Image (tube, rainbow, N blue to C red; front, side):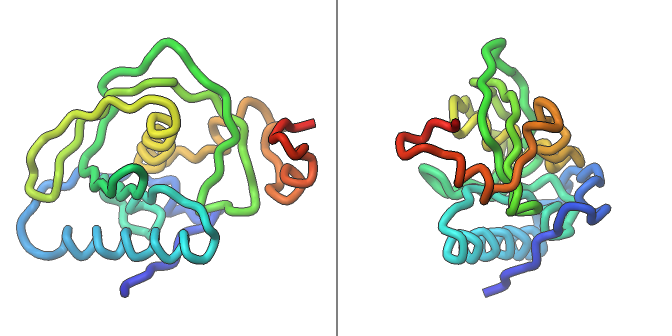
Length: 173
């Protein structure tokens, strides 16, 4: 297992613009994907949550994302090609600042073009939770954090405080 440390808020490595993957040959890209997957799985075991990770979060500024949602997926050089006009508001969290939650607006639907480990191009239409997740991770690749997308400063809260304020039905008081 090659679990890597996740960069934390304040680390300048989170603010770099990730570069495109140009070579799909050799083992370097495969090792990076395994490291990302191992790190994501370790986080899930430890915290009971987490759906995706961007390479920049482990200090590798390449445009690579690994997800574990409905199906494991590797997205190389992802780019959003279409955003819906309809947006949703939600509480977002991040491995890089696990004690915080941030209320953000995201597009309800996005279309994403990406490459797989062989360099083949794919298109993905994402809606709802998957659309939100992909926007969050692609933001990471562009050096943008969820706190940068906060509706305002009042919508950056400590996770513990947010959980204490929740009613049993999930409505925030």
